[in-house]
Each structure stands twice: as structure tokens, then as C-alpha cells.
Length: 230
Length: 230
Image (cartoon, rainbow over all chains, first blue to last red; front, side, top):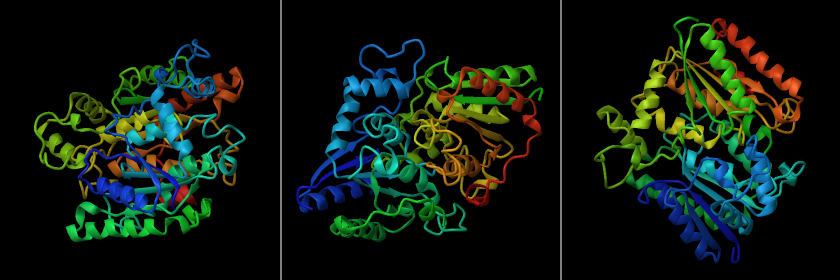
């Protein structure tokens, strides 16, 4: 939609990978629609995933016993978070839609992207009890997890060797995005691109571009346990 | 048990934290039993969580298009993984029991520990299709996730605001440990230590030491969907 702002948080080491192409397809299709698109290319940025004392500029609230959650909350209020975190928070604040593009690592996102969640979505900025879940501080935003897998669709089906892929979406979609008040669109999953033909990989890119054309008309999923564990 | 080897993978920035104390209690209790205990203190080691080309020493198998999974698999077979990864693999190989000690971050482990999983448990070392799940390459080992939460037990009960805590254990216990063939002992969870009295925190340490005394007699959980989503 013209005027809409999109942040793509992207975690792949190789621009020529399918993840790289999916990211490029999204940038192109959304810009074609008149959206403003920003990409956080985490590996290219050498984004720091570790939650440490370095995330707080200047003195600590309690230097006797370091508590990351408390210190980043206080630092956020003082405007004393490290500049790379502030930069990402600005991008999130401006965005109407967050797209996370990554290869699934161990039933979850790669550590570099988990570090983005750990360091960027601090208390005070993304949530502040009791402002969580439907009243989370990032409400009125949308999110979408777009990822590739190593295993096939059959291996991630109910009763398959990895069982239902929805089981592993719970911590990411509900535990992170829903907790911050961000609505969740259905995930976009490319199964086992390494084991299909070049032709089928091209079809995956076309299917993603096609979905993006009508993305703004989609209804968010109902982020309740029933959606995940029915 | 005398002679048993334990690796504690520990992720907290502050030695004085409850996580720090839980780690120390485990080291002391297990050594008292005659176990040999090794600790990987990830923040103190400044452990690298990012999965990059730096994990492969020397030339790449395919330098045209970098594929982390393929390259680390090949590098493992050649003995060309980076030395910090090899060091951790040696510790895992020798261990009878892996204990993961961490504060829950976003329904999961902190990024620095996810990076340990991403980089250490490479194909060829921890799994190699079809050797996964019950025939994973790390079979005959035990694991235990020991963690603290921000939310209370009630908030993590079925129907509570965060819903059943078992839902978030699936990717870590089943998706990682079970996938590698490692058996999983019941998790050890200290709920909301920041919101209880000093007395109750001391009781948490005593309870952990008490559990460790009979740990070797415990039966692993049945790591099936029913355990998590019943």
C-alpha cells in the first residue's frame, strides 16, 4: 500500500541464497506498491547478538549486580542505550510491518536474529507490564515470519518426524511478537529449498511476490493456543 | 555418580545472579558426588554466537555460494572448524550430562546460548541424516534445561497469560536435544526469582542441590508431542 513502511530484518550470510532472493523480491514488490522499505541485513551489519553491559552507555543503575533487563529498561528511559540498538528501535517504531527473513536453525531463528529480539525489544520500548500481549507497546503493527527449512513439508506435518511446524512458531510469534502487541500474519514457509529443482525454487520466489501483492488485505492469525496446538 | 562427566553451558552476565548461584551449586554438588564438571561460561568467554564463514578454517567447499550447513559439515570432516567450536565439541563428546543454565529470554534461550547450539552441534558431529532423533549421534548422553523466568508459575500455567510453559520447551528439548539423540531430563525452572524474597531464592538453591543428589536415578521424559501439548 502506498505510504506504508516496512522493515525487513534479514539473516543470511549469502546474498545468492534463496533467503537473499526472497528478501530482494520483497524489497522490489513492496517498493513497486509505493511502500517505503528498510532492510536490516544482520550479517552484513555484523549485528551484535550478545546482551551485555556494552548496551548501556555511561553509568549503571546498579553496578553492584548487573541485571540486563533492569539496566536496559533504565537506559531506554534515559536515552542511554547503545547506538546500534537505538537505530533498530527507530526502524521498528516507524514500521507498519516487520518481516523476518531467515533460514530455520534448530526449530528457531539463527542466533544473530534472536540477539536482535533480545537487544532491541527492551522493556519500556516494546512492552511495559501490564502493557503486554494485546496492549503491548508495539500494537498497530504487523509482523510476518518468512523462512526456509532443511526438512520437507511432510517431515513438518502432524505426526511427521519433526511433527507440526506450528509447534515451533509459538515462541517466536506468540512469545515475542504477540507479547509486544504486534499482530501476526500467517508465516511464509519455503520447505527444503536445497532439495528441490531450480525450477521449483523459482516458483517459490514467484509465490512470495504473488502473496505480497495482496498482503495488506490479509487478516492476522488468531494468536491463541488453539491456532498452534489444535 | 563418581566418574560421570558433566558439562554446564552457562549464560548469565553476572556471577552474583541467581543463575550464577545455581551454576555454582551444581558444580559443588556434582563434584561432591565425584563427578568431573566443566563449565562453559559463555559471556565470560565472549562466545561468538554468529554463524559465519569464520567458522571454517582455510578454503571453502563452494566459495561461489556460501552455505553454512554444508561448509561446517565438510569442515568438520576435514577437522577444519574454528578452534572455539572444536573445543566445545570436545567438551560435549566427553560429557555424560549437559546442563544448560540460563535466564529465559523471549520464550527461549539467550542469543549467546542459541549461538552455541547453532555453531557447536554441526552435521557430522551431532547428527547426520538419517541419524537423528533416537539415533542421533549424541545418543547415550543426558541433558537438562535449568532456567529462571521473569513471569510467575501462575502466568506460565495452562490458560495463564503466557500459557503452559511446556509449549516453549518443544524447540529446545525436542528440536535440539532429542534431534541429536540426547535424552532429556525434566526441566528445572525457578519462577520469577526477581519477585520473591531472599529467603525464597535461598530455598530455590537448596531445592536444586537436593534434586542433583538423586539426578542420576531420574528417568528421562518421554520427548513426544503428548508430553508438551497434552
